[in-house]
Image (cartoon, rainbow, N blue to C red; front, side):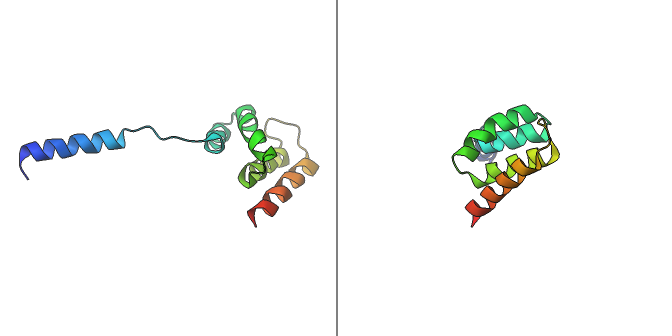
Length: 89
């Protein structure tokens, strides 16, 4: 491989790797949750959960179970987790 081909290959690799990663609300909610921004996680996950997204329902259950950014509510946590578990099967 000559130097010109090597430079072009490296340039293409950098271009491809530098493309932004597109995340949806579920992933954005997880990033917010991981950063302890529970209000944003709730805002992103609640509409998904209401539409039947099992992962969002399960994640909301975790928020209510531990009281992350909301009053701890075991009944709500169980409802969310059960709904998510039903949708996963």
